[in-house]
Length: 157
Image 1 (cartoon, rainbow, N blue to C red):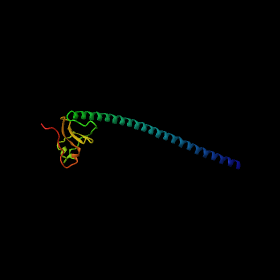
Image 2: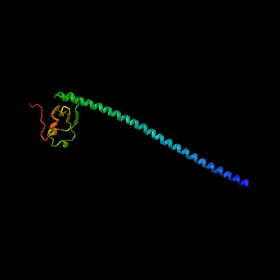
Image 3: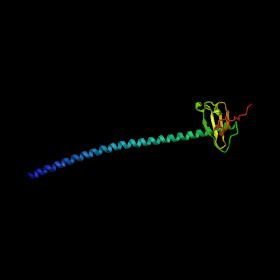
């Protein structure tokens, strides 16, 4: 009877161990499927991010190229109207908000879309209107910082 009792205990231990082993294997398999699913999503997301990054880089390169070409074209047009400094590239801006220019005499005749070319080394600023291909104003940059009005050096007819 002791032997039979030991056999029953051994069977119960084997059954319990088997059930625990089966449950552990089931959990491991489920975890493997879950981790595989998460890994696949991460790989797909990473590939998508890489594609988006490449598209952004292409757009940035295209924008930089277009901006450089537009800047060269603008300098060429303005250079046909007035002698420009040749030893530096200007900082170029577009008038987009007239309210920010109020009270500045240099920009008194500015309109939306006008271009501003600033040559810091040459101490020169030019206000150009692409729509009419005319220089609206130009002055020395240091006069922009003074309370006095910059001298308009556009020749008068």
